Length: 417
Ligand SMILES: [Zn+2]
View 1 (tube, protein in one colour):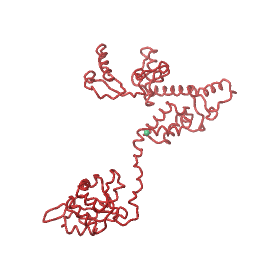
View 2: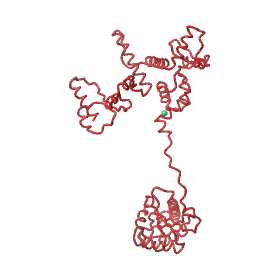
View 3: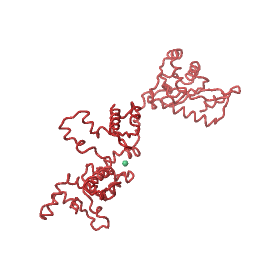
């Protein structure tokens, strides 16, 4: 709604005061989804931009605020924080140039893009402003020393051998006076840690050096600025860099698997706890035709022993016949476990519905054991037979290749496996 009102208002203003071909910018702190057709017809050539709520000065008034809060609001007094050092310097340069142009004669006025010289000067202005706001004690102390050389030096002045240069900027003395490097590297400008200007300077260097690490950013920073405890500060800033986090951030790691269920670790006879699953369809030759068959895999949950039965379809009768063969050859299990219709095996879903059939349930119930389905998305539960199904398939593939053998041959092979 706010965006629509803004569009209507702008349209009204444009009708009253026609601006020729001037670009129109509209900022809103909410995403526009509705009534975009009306907005586009009112202002077809406007530029819509997003302004975060925390940086939207209009939000204070629309949400309501007290006079005291408004008077002390840094957003209203100083505007939103700058997103990059370059933006800060460019905007400040244009402001300073505008003020200069007001004072200058018309021939001496400057126009066009800001020059490197202007950017450099305005950067020094910001550094000086920050130093005088934060290190005013040290600056006063040094000014006093110039007048009265016997004045005792402040702690930081002594520790960092601070001095004021000819422009009144606070610089660090250091130990490399005789090194053949430029003056700024020998005597870097003092900047406070945890200050927005320091942060912008660090981010600027970090981005300029293609998102380099802490050490490289620090080395480059020290060629111009001295920030106490800079390494930790850079580390904390780079930790929040979105680009770096996207590239080098670790993926979300899966939680550690929980311990094996009790029935998989008990000391019992083989096949007391049995998992069952079907493989996907296999093809055999029968009367010169290709016929689908399936493998029914019984596996012991504790010993991982495997019993394979060949079945010709996935009906209840066929499964029960296969199950009877299994029971006769091995033993009657106490608990049968199977997959809860997950997607791994195409037969799993059919198995699930198979177990729900009344005749199967009745028959199994008579034999005195229960059936369990494992929870969904819990591979450490069902993994023990999925792995064996995979192994069985690989073994069959290695033996048969792409051949379609007769049913009896396949029966022999699965017993061999
Ligand atoms: Zn980065």
